Length: 219
Image (tube, helix red, strand yellow):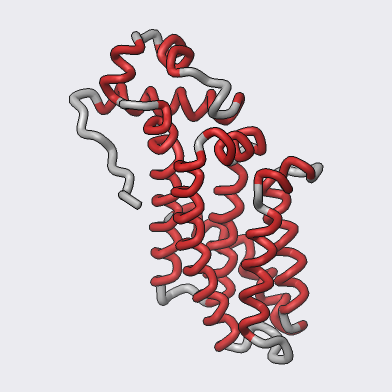
């Protein structure tokens, strides 16, 4: 799969405006319901000008979504490589990033992308799988350092988290549940991690929770 790369342009300011306007429209109405004409009209430019910056509506969609995913991945890498942070701080900071990412994605847009922009949806899923692999490595560190119960095999802990995310964070399921994708993700985290933490370690996580969120926002 070729990596998405922004096309060089003589007007980066215009390009950024197109991306921001498209993001707002896509989040509110979905991908398929928004035309390039509507994006251009909202910006007060012609379709010709818009197509000078982006060849297709799918390219606009990629510019809206993929850079944000790459940014969150870099922030996670920064947190995981920071030797000053304890495991609880790293875990809470990474989970805060995941939660924020899910908060941005509205159910309308998620369902729409799966049906009407399948190629872009596959690219998004590839990014998420790579990010999940990093999270699994972090869980392995927590297991190795004794933060999780020793009577539950490491592989089960990791697979339970992965299976829960993959089965619940889908367009179909999110459309059926009476809550946002952020609330679903937070529910997964609460159930799984409060269930596998040793009793003595829960207080450690509670003490680190507020500070870890600040760390995530600074990365």
